[in-house]
Every structure is written in structure tokens, then in C-alpha cells.
View (tube, rainbow, N blue to C red):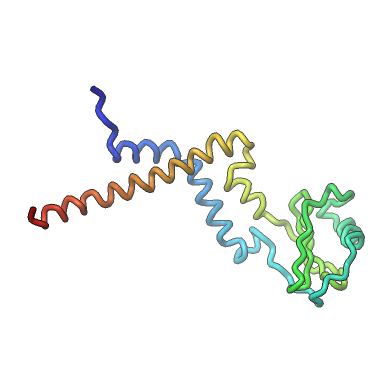
Amino acid sequence: MAKPLSNRRIHYWLGIVSALPVLVILVTGLMLQLKKQVPWVQPPEQKGGGTVPSLSLETVFQTCQIIPEAGVKTWKDISRIDIRPAKGVMKVLARNGWEIQLDSSTGSVLQVAYRRSDLIESFHDGSWFGEWTKLGIFLPAAIILLVLWVTGLVLFFQPLRVKWRRRVPS
């Protein structure tokens, strides 16, 4: 008859198997937690003059074309445009990772900076490595982390339960 695996052995081996993906998830998660505080991760959001956006998309596109870092030649070079009316700013994210912040009423360039948060997020969820890695390594690592959490709690509370049973007379 086979000896059943103990919580300690399960915890030990799953911890070793999941160590590298969990380390990547942990480090990138910490970086994402601080993305608003660390300008290296994500450029700070600037404030524009007005609160009502009055720029046409064509003006936004033309402004982005003159920024050499962004490398915008066609609309396909723009990943997304984020409009923040309350702050009076439009953020244009180029496909190459550069972010251009424009005053949404005047069209003046407030800031041009490289945005790393999207790249860090793709490392965090495993999608940077490919779909197979995301679902074949990072998803199982997350499930293993959940099992480690459960077995860790069991290992923590088992001695307490034994102590409690010894104190309470039957």
C-alpha cells in the first residue's frame, strides 16, 4: 500500500516547482503596485489647462507624428488613446511603448516618456512569453500557489490544534 503524501511533502515539492514563475509574478506585482509612485514604471500623469476635450483625433494624430520617439506614421502605430477630461489630458500610447501626453484643449505636448507598465504587466501574467507559457506555466503556478497557501495554513494550525486538544480535557 502506498504511503499517502503529507501536507509537508506536498508543500515542499510544489514550492520548488513553482518557485521561478511565482518569483516573476511577485517581483512584477510589486512593480505594478508602485507604478503611480515610480516614474520609471509609468510616467506621471500631467494636468492640462481645460476640462472639456476640444482636439480632433486628426490633430492628435498629427501631433504624435512629429514626436520622433513615438514612431507614429499611421494609425496602426497607435495602441490606444486615453482621455482624462477631469485632468484635461489625452494620453496616446504608441505601439513601441512611448506615451505622449497632450493638453486636451490646446494640443500642446505635456510630456513624452517611455511607459513600462504594460510590458511589466505582460511579464506578470505570462503573456509576454506566449499563450502556451501563460496557460501552461503561469496558470498552474497560480493554482500551485493557492495549494501552497492552503497547505501552509494546515501546517501552521495543526500544532495549535494539537496543543488545544491537550489542554481541553475530554
